[in-house]
Image 1 (cartoon, rainbow, N blue to C red):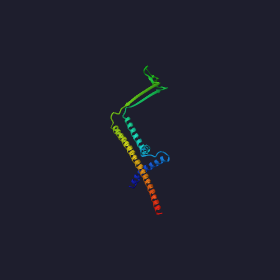
Image 2 (cartoon, helix red, strand yellow):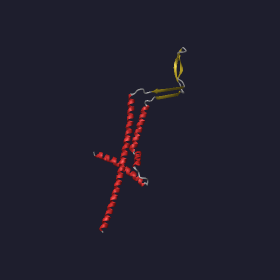
Image 3 (cartoon, rainbow, N blue to C red):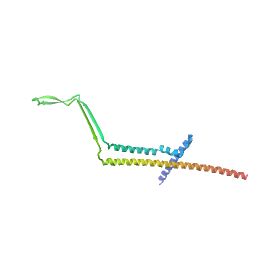
Length: 194
């Protein structure tokens, strides 16, 4: 339970603190103060969780495309060119000329040879392919919804932090006004008493 409180506090404090630093940076560098309308796109564009969500979504789309490509026709080609400088020689008895006692050399093969082949395959039906494709599409949708939820959560945290900073500024101004009024009242009291 204690870890949960720390986790929730860190999710509220970190965006508020980062927005405070961001506003301080803009004011220190002499640039225009950052308003809520400008802070939200800046936070969304530069948050690592949102960027990671976009990358996960892109990775899911690539996985779907890879899986789809395995269902397309597959074409494989092979070509071979062979040169035999020395041909094999075999010795046979000369039965053709009627001299079985004579042994003649016979050359086997050719000096040049070529071979080519093309293989085309097409996935006709595969339940695994269909289930895998559906799972990949669902995973992509999950990544997309996670990225959108992360983005919305970030916008919520930035707006909470922005309004918390505005409340602190307003309280600071109220405290300064109260101090000024109390100083005036003390001066009026001291003036009346003297």
